[in-house]
Length: 276
Image 1 (cartoon, rainbow, N blue to C red):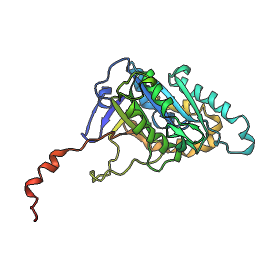
Image 2: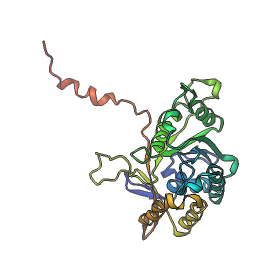
Image 3: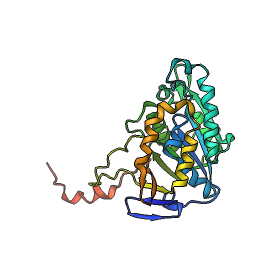
């Protein structure tokens, strides 16, 4: 397994290239809009966390009630998918107790990205409490660039809710604990275009793995027997990841709370003409 920095054009077998300052024992949150999204988009990193002494915590937001390909499959689907998810992530080394099911109906997650709702409470408090209680130091969440309404909702929660985990607010929800890095993974859609890169390299980081690792991931994906028609084209597209050196998984650094660089503006002051 090798980690790639596309912006610096460098590579290393050290996970610090992807997660700077990494320490064994860290807790990493993987936010999954639906139960199969993390295995489809972030399985290599999940495995890398385990291999480097970390502990993955999986948050599955939607309950999968829309994922039926025939009407007959609708009955009992949610329970079936939970069993499939547990088996899938067990294959990759995740313990069942480290999987949290939030049970939000499919295609409605965006309406839960809040603290208070007209019909009850949103997910903000639940997620913030969990991130603090589990002392999450890294967070990985789905691409919000035109993939799926629920994926965009998880992207928003990753960008904003998780950023509050280290703030000295809502302390009744747990002791503030700073998340050190935020990464975005893609399930099938491309990342937002980076206008600063003329080569169209929109991902910042990558993980390169051998065929054995990819085949292990495919066995895990196969646990979702109820979803084979739904995700068939995504699984087939995985062959596009293959290079002569192995299979590639891509990430983009989430630009959370980017501060203003006043030096750029101060440098322009002398050239600003005074007007009467």
